[in-house]
Amino acid sequence: MATVSPVDEPEKRKSCVTVQSRINFTKIGEIDTKNEKFAAEAYIECTWYDDSILKKFIEINFSDSNMDFLNDLNETKIKFLHSILKKIQYDPELFWSPEIYVENSIGSPKEYFTYKFDLVLTDKQAADSIDSYIVRITEKRRVEGFFYERLELNDFPIDLQELSIKLTSKKSVDEVILVECKSEKSGVNIECFADQQQWDLFDCVKITKNSFDDKWKKYVRSEFKVTCLVVRKYGFYLWNAFLLVFLITVLGFTIFSISPTTPQFRCQVTGLLLLTSINFRWIVTQRLPSVSYLTLLDKYTIGCLIYLVLFCVWHAIIGSESIISNIELKRDVDFYFLIGSAITFIVFHLGFIFWFIRKIIEIKHLKEAIFNHSHNETNGNHIHTSDTNIELE
Image (cartoon, rainbow, N blue to C red; front, side):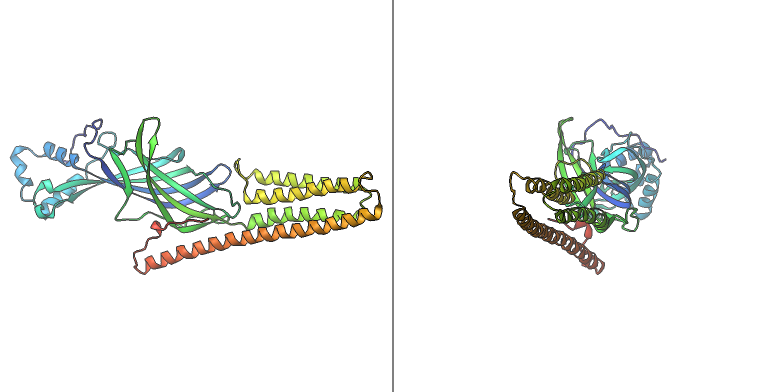
């Protein structure tokens, strides 16, 4: 008895179908900063209503002689109809489907689908009439793979990143609109995070609903995006990048112990430090994508490189007999240059440290805000971390 013919899929719906969606990050794997992608497993649930399935089901399975069964529906009859509907094998290639897919997946991710049918009452005043019921279809999907995410690395390595999974439909907004699920919220499982040594995962998600213009198909499509937040643990780069560049640059000041009358030795040592610093910077940049702007680490290393270049130029100038021939004057001018360079170097680092601490405090306040939202939700204040708008200047 549980048979139903496919709906004419090519025919467009007369009205727009609202698809309630939610995404749960069940597991987040490695975050690949260089290639701007991350590995993840997610549970995706999409729900929509279809009145054509119930009509087709009745036309095929109920003849004129037993149509009386559908009159004066009671709880027993509804349960019977519901049990039969559950036996229907839903095929998105045969029935009407919103044709939802993950937009930012890379390659061919592993996807597993299951479908559920529910008979939903739309008019409580006429609960005994079959016309007051509609079929609710729930598509449950588990997806595993890599997802593209454009990373903003201006504050690297104290950067806050958004990891998103985007859903969209192949149909236009005139046929399908993706909205947030009202009954259950999207979320993230912070316990199953494989990259905990390098990142901190926040216990919140951000929901974004918008539409975009499909230039190829020449119509507007709906998009639903769920974003989780991660912040990089900067300790590794603090000790293995910032500190080493700092020490190399500090060695540039020791060269002033060499007499300014022997610029060949000064320039030789300074050039060696400069090449060492450039080589070290090149190694660090291999871990990052080729971006057109400077990261925080770039600004620091380039600033230190400028100091070494200025030192090298200065040693060549002060050692020239044609500029300053008096040895005592050479030493006095060289001493004043050393003092001025040391003062500007200290001011540069104080400003950098101030900015560094400011970013750390901002991230700390962000964590506290998310924790307070989670705590209020636990106490029943109906505040969902999923709805929290997170911004970090």
